[in-house]
Image (tube, rainbow, N blue to C red):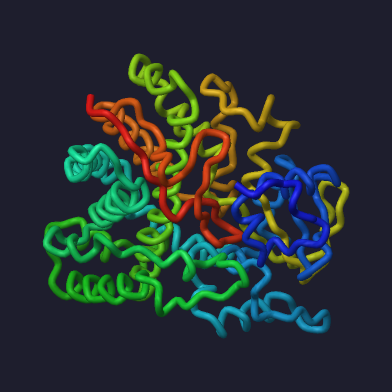
Length: 427
């Protein structure tokens, strides 16, 4: 990990600097020392590290638009104070179809997409999907258990997340082999350093085309299956969404539920390896595993930062935001705010207020997949601990304790590793 002392944060651009992508918490503490809300001085961005201030912004959809949630300041929109803001935002969306995804939609459009999403993530589907999680977790562990080592990202995380999401949204079993392996190049993900990514090179484009065929087929030839029920899901007013709306939500769930969940697994295994005795305690007290998942989300959450675009002049936490500014909500910093959490930089399995973390956001845009991610994390830990013990880093690849070496995602929004090799003994 990059030493904080080698980085001049006052002169470093968080949107292009790999050193901050690899070690974001030093940068967040630099910001926090200046206050909970701090203008960055470049790219017209205001950074938020305070828990209460960030939550207030999350809940204020009147004054803050989600159009830049994924792109950050790399938005094809130059604010014109002489034109209505909503007109400018709508014009910007028209230039880039990616800005119409559920994450970037505002108010009524977002609520419509969420109606489709809620039709996917129902209690009944979640229960059935969780049963499948146990099955697929063991199948994947079977593939590497005789080797005594595995890459958490590609050998466990990606196939597990891909197959779980595919089952949840009803991808036919015969097509799931083609789904496995649909992983985005780390250099072609939203939030990529420098702001450039090619959506045509992202496997979500292939998944979208595949799902479009499913929607047309199930609407013309309904069956008694999950996919048909999804394709017939209506808006709250009873109207049937156009096929592309269903495709957009299903594709979003497939992609968003993949990258973040994979990195959650990697984070949990880093914590297991770095905290002696934690494995044994979780085996002895499995009821603590959900708390372990949430503390991992708090202290090592995958989403470092998300964004909002200021619609109207508004004052929050003593700071006045101006229309046209980008707001960088540093979730990873909010989750380590000392005003909210005691000893915030320390892992604590017994933390009483752990579930107040904002790893899944807050307000209208709070992640609907939060319960799914928690279930995936819990099942993954249960099955890995049931079959592996003495889980440790492959030091030949990652170096000894206190000198670990990883290749990190070149991303200003997401925190994670390109690969993470672990060794273990069989239970």
